[in-house]
Image (tube, rainbow, N blue to C red; front, side, top):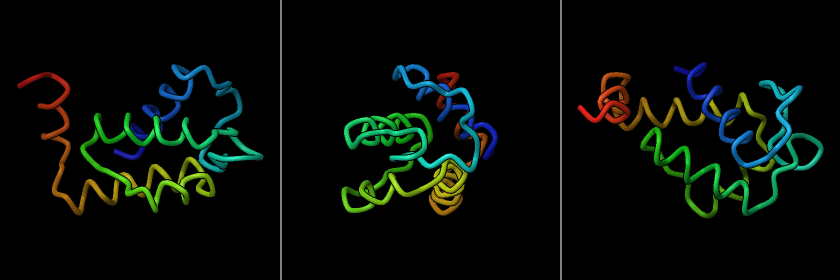
Length: 97
């Protein structure tokens, strides 16, 4: 599941016009990494919420800039596990079943 989340994050960054060449699990989302600004971080969080059904609070949004792509993907996967949003739910959500 983490691989799917990672690919979604990278695709989202590309859609948001960020250069994703060289982006990997060790790339920081904020400055000195992918260089996402606060509005871009908020947009990424909303995209992840829409796609995977997990949310980050406003307080947590500030912490996203310090996370690496790998840490962010792991946090999303952990929230999915905690919320009981399994892969079958994800398939149904994306296919409309």
